[in-house]
Structures are given as C-alpha cells and as structure tokens.
Length: 53
Image (cartoon, rainbow, N blue to C red; front, side):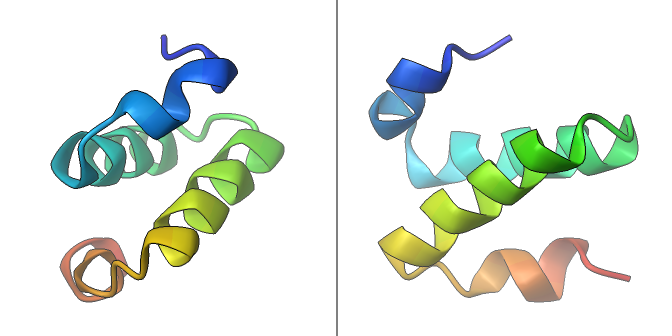
C-alpha cells in the first residue's frame, strides 16, 4: 500500500495504476477521492477515458 505522504513520489503511470486497482478492489471512497484529486492536480485526463466504464 502507498503511504499517503508519498503520493507525490508516484509517477503519473503508477498513480493511474493505483487509482485503477483501488476502484477494482472497491477500496475506501476517501482514498479513491484522494487519488482522483492528485490526478486532477497533475492535469492527467487520460485516466478517465481508460478506466471509467
């Protein structure tokens, strides 16, 4: 599991992978929202197309 304090250390690819796995595993909604916020802060748009059904 990724420490919350180290999210900024993740590459964009790993961040998207973490989001994908978190949604597949139905992890805590707050954790998923935190990942989405970080993705939005980085301006990554492709994750929405790739992983949202």
